[in-house]
Amino acid sequence: MKSMEEMIKAAQEAAQTVQAQMEEAQARLESIEVEGKSGGGLVSVKATAKGRILGVSIDDSLMKVEEKGILEDLVAAAFNDARDRADAISNEEMSKMSSGMGLPAGFKLPF
Image: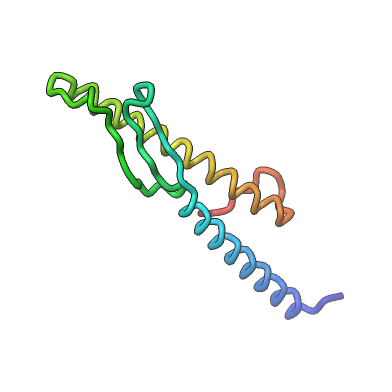
């Protein structure tokens, strides 16, 4: 039977491993790019899977004063689409990591 000290040391080592894997996963998310689109591609937003916005593209046809409200709605929709795609990739990456740790199904890691 293991001593209490051995069990504590093993738990600390496991926690350090989890922390290192979390940091690696977060770094991967920053390097993955997603693109959200709206208006059939008239507006697009590029972002990292971690949610940092890299750029916005707006079709010239939307650059009219009378289209301002539509443009604003399309930009918001493209941001939301990019965020949804980033969340999906983030969840996928975290699932890959947690499945390799033998954690119970549905266990959520804080990130």
